[in-house]
Image 1 (cartoon, rainbow, N blue to C red):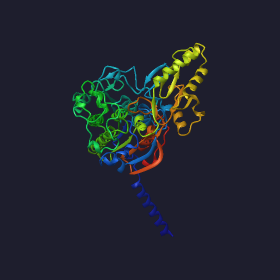
Image 2: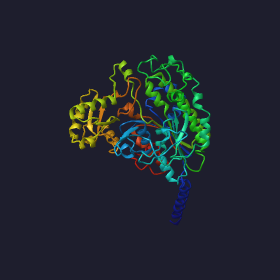
Image 3: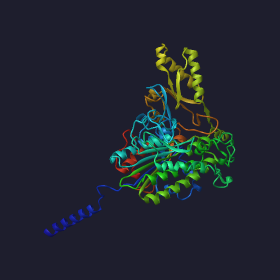
Image 4: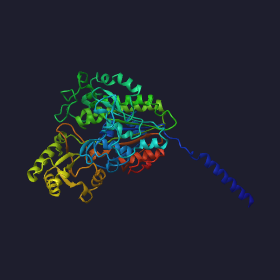
Length: 544
């Protein structure tokens, strides 16, 4: 009996010792660097539409070795750039983080507001409005803020994008720096929110005038043009043109563009190349991933959006842009392998929104589509209200598929505001392409199917949203007869890619429905830090 007891004691002791030896340490290893890679206007299907010609080191590497959430959606409207970047990094929605569009009507000051404008700061590296930017219009913390808070601001966080909003909003309130591109001079700039002067490495990079160097090479297709799959002809009247060009066909004579070359580069694959090159300089000179704590690079590729708006998804330009982007991503991942080390960095790749097919293209194939003009709506409604109620300029603002009414002035002049709203609702319902119109405060009681109702509610913010909202038929949007846009609830705008790759990520794929709001809490969970303070997302357990 005693021997049996002793045997179990020894067995238990050995088991405990083995468990202690193999238990996780009290301070689990973390990645040296997290890279958030947002591809502006990347539809989810681009992962597969061009896959046959992708190389092995870019998208295919991330799909083949990382984890892909195939059904990730944006859970709000409107689906615009500023809102998307903010939601990715806060895990919140416009109702909680406050960024309701690229622009909105700020009710407290009765003024149209740009998402990152800040009159209290000055530009660094630039003297005009382009530099007067900061993240102060965002109400919430980002996962980058929470990373800095977790270790008393030892982690370095840097945001980079051709667009100010693509750099500033992801980097958060406490970032070490955010840099964006100035299209008049081709320089990378910042603001006094972050620094008093540009670091020497940024000034040195600007001095190289890399943008002008890249614009010396004309944009030809990577492969013979007759082998491209997305268009039977290059010259389509519904495609726009690159600034400085008079045609919309290949080859794009970039070398002939002079006065607008720094603007034009944003519409070409070279805009992505320039962004990746600048990001590499940031990694080296800011020693990102070289310290004892996790650093974060928030990198947004904006040229895909400028190109997409101009030429649309069904263009040779779109196909060639993503084939070249694939090469840039492959090169960047190899750079991270060598500089930070394989297995030492975590990358997530996603998009801020998708894009609709160009209506002209759809009409060619007998698919209903069309455009309308917000400004035309506003003019028409103001005249109709003036004729019926004797009150001019009733519609102060019309954007984001919402209207702001001048209710204070109406009430002061004894105008029946309820009657005006009823008049506007009836007028909008008469439009054949408008499917639903409602007061934004009535969204919950309006007959809307899911997920549209939830998207509308998530996008509503009393301080910054309009008084009346309208929804349109699939394939219709506010825009022009050339190119395309985004902003609506439809899958072409709201279905986005979401890939995780690198540190702590196993290979796999999930077809369950996930949301953009899940990205920030998932990254926070992996880093073992608090999720952002306006987050409504859930942790994606497949990668944790």
